[in-house]
Image 1 (cartoon, rainbow, N blue to C red):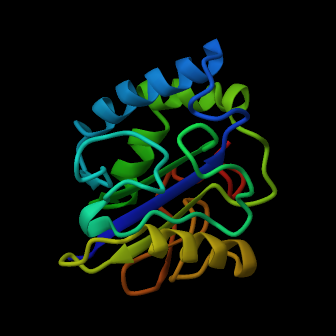
Image 2: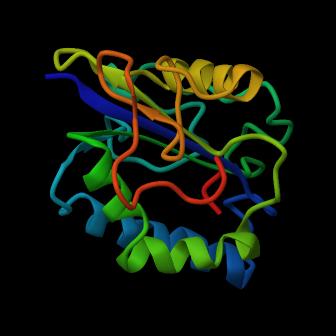
Length: 185
């Protein structure tokens, strides 16, 4: 059975290394969110640096998740002092558990604060696709699918909650899933 891959990407208002309270708050809540999400039913795994370090993202060893890369529209820094982004890559059993994890609890609270931390974007900030169960998606997979979603809209190759597909490419609508737009707000 294929797994649901999820890539998220956002541009922060200030670099992760910025000592300002809002940046520290985002960084700290991220740890708690990951902890909660990793315990959620339907969660399988997420990309973590192979050595457990947190840094500029670009210079870390991500193991089977591949080399870290970003969408073409990211124009901020790439060093530990200047990186101003948040990106995740995770695997799920299905849309319902992913939706429930994202739109409830601590992650929902964080979403309510997103404009404190993130720049508003003209680009989608997340994308789903189905990955064979023996494949670990790479950062490049996530970036290429997010860019495809931006350029072409939802398709079986790259989709959103609102316009989702089954593993065989059939459009689907799971009751209660789907914000009123294609972007997580």
